Length: 73
Image 1: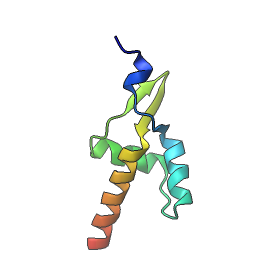
Image 2: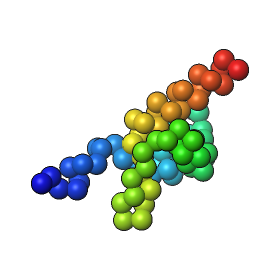
Image 3: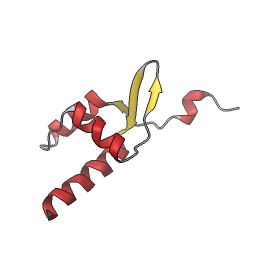
């Protein structure tokens, strides 16, 4: 049986780290905004040792989609 760590994506980050990443890209978002957006979009959230983690690639796609919606509005 594979170990638990083999089942987790390699790009897991917490919401604070994801928010810091987006701040560096010039499109800042707070960690709470990211958390609400992830919940609204049913993005998978892993809980590892009481930390809530998301795939950074999932958050990038979600953030891109949110930007596309705001541009078209």
